[in-house]
Image 1 (cartoon, helix red, strand yellow):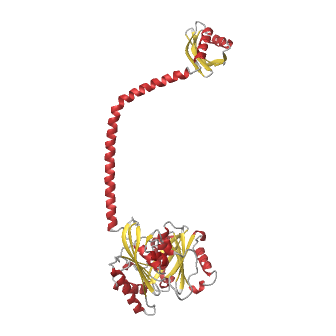
Image 2 (tube, helix red, strand yellow):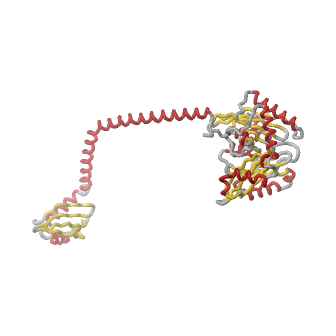
Image 3 (tube, one colour):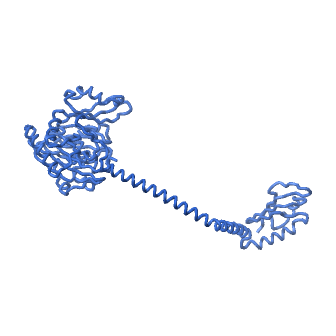
Length: 460
């Protein structure tokens, strides 16, 4: 029910020097990038001008074509967030949010009331769980929210670039591998992130200068996979550079053509696939999360500012569902009615042809009986049967008689009565036409005669 939907989503990625906005619409299973725009922003050393430029860019983009900003997801730089990992007893999962709030000041260097946080959990055996805690200072959040509020846009979620890019890649790949690794570069630092089973396992921010040395990136990734107990053979790696200038770009590792991954999955202008801006991918990933096509569920927006992000299917989806259910009911009832009518017609037809069926069965039984007789008197056997009957007539005494004569191949079975059944066996053994003559069952006496059953082989 989450996938076939009618939604419009706005993704906003705020980078170090620009803001990129992506407007995505979803109609059932068709997802389309309808509009995208990148606008330069003043640096963080001019916060007032930067905020005004952000508000103006969002207002102009959202108001140009009356874009529906009801479902908006904001993507903020990784440098704004603090990420830490903690291992807790499995019993803590029942009240994990309270446990994390209690331990917050021991995990990050900020007071609890000054941060908003979210987390992802994965089990480590039966007795422990690993919690990845992602925190964002409320002061930073407040600055973004006030700038967007002035543009009459209220986001429903705040994510990191690695999460937005992971949502984008997961959408483009469909059924992807069990784990994905992301190397996301910015002018000052590079984020190394691991995602598996729909969870953000790790996110480490490394100064880009440290990764310029040959093999430094591979060692960092290998160490991170080892810490998270992830098999490197099962990890699909992706790299993306979010900004130009400053330190050297991200060293190429894994797949780097992220816009090309969307071909066949995302309907978009050809310019997006050929020459997408670096900030386009996280902006589209955030928009995909806004239309419920996301993979990760980490949301750094404070709880008190969240609207029901997963409020369920839209009104259009419910209308479509109701129409589908109605059609199914009508189809089911009509199928039942047709089935009853066909059963009635069939029953009437069966009753009509019942006499013919009985007659056919009678004729078939007669044919079967005649066929048995034909098998007994098969071609080439009738002459031999006559000869055997003549031979037996001469051998059997006049005071004996047969009740059954059965010839199957070369085996003859005789049933009958005689004053002395053993004399009959003696007589047959003297004949050249029979051998291995013996009683096939014990003889029984009835009055002055013995009832016998004799078996013999017919000599060819």
